[in-house]
Image 1 (tube, rainbow, N blue to C red):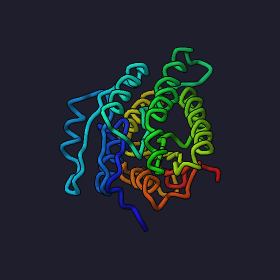
Image 2: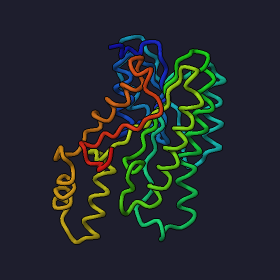
Image 3: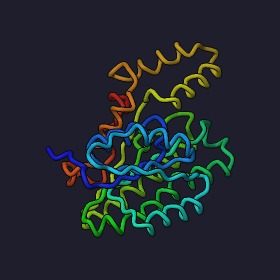
Length: 262
């Protein structure tokens, strides 16, 4: 099985912590040169310094705030104009705040739409020309199992994640002939800072301890545990590899079996 990414350049968003960081590390381990993208330059430098680089990779950082799409467009354009070309794009952005859809302010939808779909589109448009030239491209979107089944209490997230899922499938159909695949990884409950925050907020709302809420969540998962960020990263890294060249336009849940549909 060919998992070698030597000579490939990857742009990994949200890569200072959690799933994004784990993906960046796994891609570097497989030989890719990784450009880390997030809004905190200091943390980006810390992660960059820790990445595997004995295969001659040259890792970089791109400081960008996804709440400012126009700024992101300028910065990625500058990267491309400077000669940077990407074979792998990992779209990964923190999820919107929780709450019911009917109660959400219109601005919440606009912000989430910009941070997820619009920014994904900006990056894809910037990266695809080089992917076409190389006849090798991997666009991988880290979304949520809500693409398959909406999650109660995440109204804005369910809505926007679904839009990204359909955008992704559309791109897969458009770009497949150029050696470019577009797929989605759908993490379930993953042991990250975001999950800890969700558990704490839910515990306060229900008048329970965090431990009680955590135990209840694990009981909903056939694997009876949360995923590690590394387990989600492994799925993304496989989809980024030459071995996954004929896998296109799919959703891959990494949820321990929790999602109740095929």
